[in-house]
Image (tube, rainbow, N blue to C red):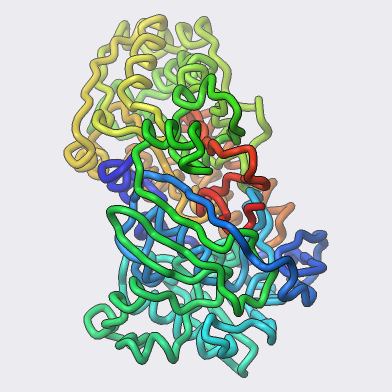
Length: 555
């Protein structure tokens, strides 16, 4: 998953404005309340106005010492947060720049305080007010103020780079030096899950302006600060940028003025290394963490720790619902035959240790996901009966997919072959039509695949990102699922997209996925494994859906 896979992620989700985080309707009158005892800690949830608070845990921990080498196959274009939206950039910038809120460890269900010690949400879900902690400073010792937050977020929006969609429909203002208000044109309960993104890291506005940066309209041509930010960071995070190359390595040094708990390691070297070499390096302790090993590569390794879990990426199959594309795949009984003809357990076994069946379209680690084990199960008899009801006989259809890439070490071609075999058992002949990702994307985006095998990587870890799969929405349209195809489901989507209360949101998104699993043309298949292999000397190694691993949490 290097260049070609980055193109796929950009097109299918996980990057660059492939989806919208908000939809319009009336909002729920209740919302979640979370209280945290210290920055980066968890909290409890209750209903009634939405408030998150944090205490004053600052500057704790022993002085950083020693160094560590992290190896990953670079997907990296820039260290400038306003222009960055690649996996390696998210990993690096999370260590350099603080955000209003963040996630702790691998938990992306609960945003916790970072630069903001608390926030409140209006009942209609359009206004989020953040109170900044007053002890945070940038690496040059100057205080972090609301003016820096406004500059940083407006700069992301106006540079119009890959991460600019995160600010779509959102304006930012500062009533005073320690208060920031984000206002959305429509109800947007996803905002607390959007602002932890490393691309929304807060920069030192004075330093960036001095380097030619601007947050004004026209910043896409007027801003000249990228080169400076690729040489030296301008953040308040636990690390600073010492050296930077998009092809060889990036070196981070502990920030001596960091306001929070000090990181353990004085220096972190992130090296650009392919997965097969990563394995060798971590086994001989030339590197301490390998990020990109597949389940097969990680199998059987010894004297190291293997951290394995489901990635947030979801492979899915669809049967085009547009009769103009195919009278076969748009047949509801045919779709049921496909749904129950798939051997989901077999696909998970193919994907390797750590992979799980996608119970629904929302990843298992996100708010609103369905319970593990509740997904569709193979039932060949039911599939054959549905195909008989369809009146189509033994149809032949074409399955399209990108054939030249892997995601989390899993080839689309291997999955496609297995789907072909599964459906042959039912009486469906599948012709495989793998193409290069750049070619395959054209027909996919145009909604021309009869059967399509694709993957969605999240734009942000909130279930609203998956409303894209509903009728009339981005992925729904690619599957030929037009607006009005399922009014009851679409109404659920509208309600879910504007509801603030976490428990209520969870119920609504689970109802949406249950309905989709029963009768929709889109079939979630699996979440492949995300694997980290690390030396036993490194502690607290946790995989994260946004930034792969939190470098500052390593012990």
